[in-house]
Amino acid sequence: MSAPGPAPVFHAVVLAGGRSARLGGRPKAGLRRAGRTLLELTLDAVREAAGVVVVGPADPAVPAHVLRTREDPPFSGPAAGIAAGLRALDALPAAQWTLTLACDMPGVSRAVPLLLEAARTGDGAAGYVSVPPDGHRQPLAALYRSDVLRRAFAGQDAADRSVFSFVRELPLRDVTVPEDATADVDTWDDVHRHHLT
Image (cartoon, rainbow, N blue to C red; front, top):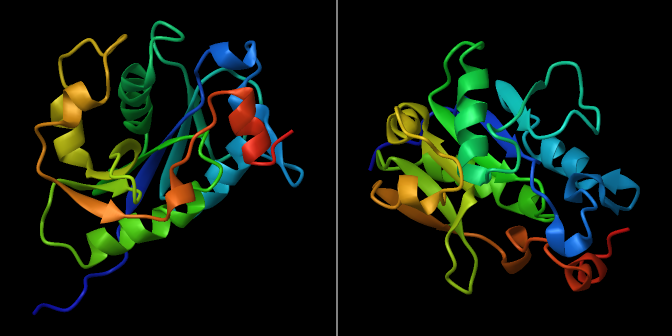
């Protein structure tokens, strides 16, 4: 059995551009837990990334080292957000891995180290996708080989398409994560359940 490799060098695409229709248009990125916004919590989860891009509106502010971009057209879905994020990351030195995270998962910091560890000790898979105990694969809490992800999106219009339509054929490995690691916030019931304000 081969020894684990070094810590993966990765970029992160953080998606923060949804309409939040079921929250009356209130941006999820600005919801707070214990005084910190969901966007801040998500950025903290990727603090070891070589480069980070937030895809979404210009507000709220992000640290100076974090890139900003917007999906085209705005509100055209997470796949369009990933495509826009990949284009923005072209400005940085290449990284072997790209982590995709939606900013509406308050517990996602529990998934990120498990994904990185899977890549460090892994078997050459195209990527690693979070799977909580209910078995629902979450492609917006996943770590992909950058070249593989870029090829999957190359030359395609990603607007209003599902992320699964781009990645379902990739040889991804499931990574078991805690139940709350990928639980997202879509409704006011979710807001209350996650103790957000």
